[in-house]
Image (tube, rainbow, N blue to C red):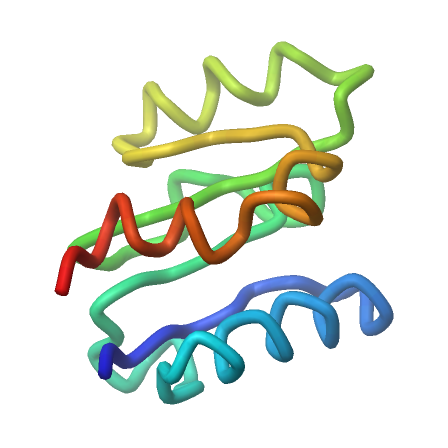
Length: 98
């Protein structure tokens, strides 16, 4: 079980991510509580401000420039929101292998 922080001001989408994280058996923690993985909405927050050993970012597919910005800030994986909906568990497993 990993410790996962979610930085997502959108309460509806954030709650979907929370459900996926806990459904995969991981613990939700605050970003300042030394998480193993941080999942962040890079449209809503500056990727440079997100710290963590592993970082997964998501963005609206129409704002592709955000992907490069997040990779430049050191994110491990950056995907469109639609892919987060479909593949959240798989993305987490890629970053936090058992």
